[in-house]
Length: 436
Ligand SMILES: C[S@@+](CC[C@H](N)C(=O)[O-])C[C@H]1O[C@@H](n2cnc3c(N)ncnc32)[C@H](O)[C@@H]1O
Image 1 (cartoon, rainbow, N blue to C red):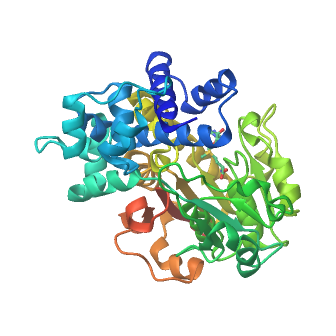
Image 2: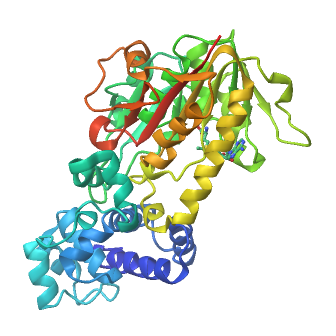
């Protein structure tokens, strides 16, 4: 396919998403199944255009004065992919029957100016949903537009080296050809930077080193959350919201074979391929605890040195990677997450032994799911206090604390990582000590 056909395909897929309101992955997959002539490069380019439009839907619409899939894809191709008006006109070749009609005079004028109108409000400049602006503004104040823009950029591929099997230097040597480099904060992380335009991200799961369990795909922010949780050591650990096991695997490597990590989730479908991942990583210290009749964790009540609560959340911190979720999130979903967070924190509190700790983590940037939850938790009880997580940062990462990530809450400090501040996904991390 030439670029004209790819642009048309992206327009078609975005049109389908408008009508059927479903996850972008499903729409792309269906398109691939019904257009088998498209090769992997085509599908990559089409997916890239669709994702880029979703990342910057509000600001691209403001530039174009229209929110149609055609206007948005034209703007993404000409401006985000830096092909310019000329490149777009060339792609819309009338000889190519798959290409869209060339830009009209108004589209051409807007694309050559490439400017967001001066009167555009902050939520448009920040590419954030308008209804969430009070929450984002509460967290970031004047910096909200810069944070939103960073959250609307592409993210690289982050890898966590499995230190049960290899060192960072060894894996770096194996993956240098893919452009891997050491991450700035996590001492066990590697990053392959995000490409531009239709550049393809390397298929890291095809590497033999991956199949041998030398690394996992894990955002650097998630690696840091696991390192902070592990700082100070622990023997009996409960991963209360284990899902596919990303945190359990990281903790198994950080805490070593003497620890026992009980990985639980109340929805067994969320375990996914956890057994394969555990086996590949050689993480023998992980025991999967399936949900079932009664409470399968009851026998551990009051015994855990560490409970990691990787809480169900809106995922607002991951919008670089899941930009469609940004526009689908509804107020009801936030309310539901907040209720679940209170529940899992209460469950975690019963599991911790006196003198033990909870590490509460979300991949959300919203205060309702973060500092408000922690303040409500410690406000309602005498037996837990908020630790100074900024003081743990150096022990956990070996680096100096980045500016502006400490969050005062409940007499202690939590941490908020953001794409702008730390070039990671957005994460919130709080450590809560149970009095001895
Ligand atoms: C953010 S995801 C976990 C991701 C996982 N820890 C990882 O690193 O790959 C949150 C998980 O919490 C689970 N969950 C929600 N409510 C729960 C509850 N009351 N008890 C245990 N797990 C719960 C969800 O099923 C979901 O898998």
